[in-house]
Length: 381
Image (cartoon, rainbow, N blue to C red; front, side):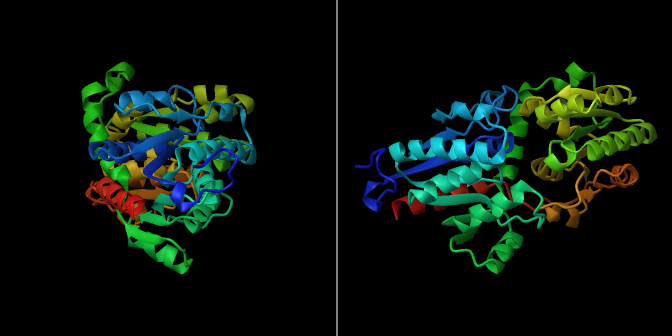
């Protein structure tokens, strides 16, 4: 039997069960179809919430809205952590103790947040298998903490679930040790399944007094944008130009981090004085999905929002100099603009004129089935 005194687990200590690690809005959304599929197959699994996102809108509302069971474990101590190392270390410590108790044969992580690196490291150190969903994505921008996380997770994973051949090729170049599975991306499954729920539950357009295709959705949360006074100021000036030139109202769904920086940098008044810019706290997921689906244009620095915009066939402008989701650029669903005001306006005008007739490059909506099938095969092997 394993105990809290052990540093590693032996093969005979492990159970034929699966641990699922979530902790951020994109992670909860990505895993929603996977959790549903595990439950549909009556698989032996449990869910750990890292506590990385811990406000109601960034956390519990997603489980409530998506009709998902509450996590079996939640790490509350992470709420007080602000630095990357501190946060990652606290999550690693908490998840290690849970995994020593649960002893799964496989732990699934998805994406590139600190949550996923912590879960993968905790499992790897205990000799538990690691499966990485959304593996093989690369921006090749080493300024981004997410890029470090992606690379490290991929190189300690046993199952690498890639979205398409682009991910397979990237992993092959890096000579990863694990087995590569082209599963597609469950974000497609999630968008399709959850949009149906949103149509039944969300009344956000009425609440905000909006008409379909008559507004722009804006989100910003990346450190390189919102933690920089220069970049955040430039982005606001860019939005001033976009609002003025297009005549469209901009719904700025602001991440808690972004609201905090606007206040710290003295930019709250600047934002409030931009005609047509509505700064709002982050919405619950179903409301946000509904806002995206009915927007005329989406402007964002989020990788997950880029994907969802493409899937929902809403033109997108990315406020970064690069993207790991280059497929969105290839199919004409997205443009890079950084935070330069002139580039932002030019990209917005071009994408507003685009015809959203692109295909979905992330899968056919059955990715969760493949991921669960391969995961179950791994735990009983």
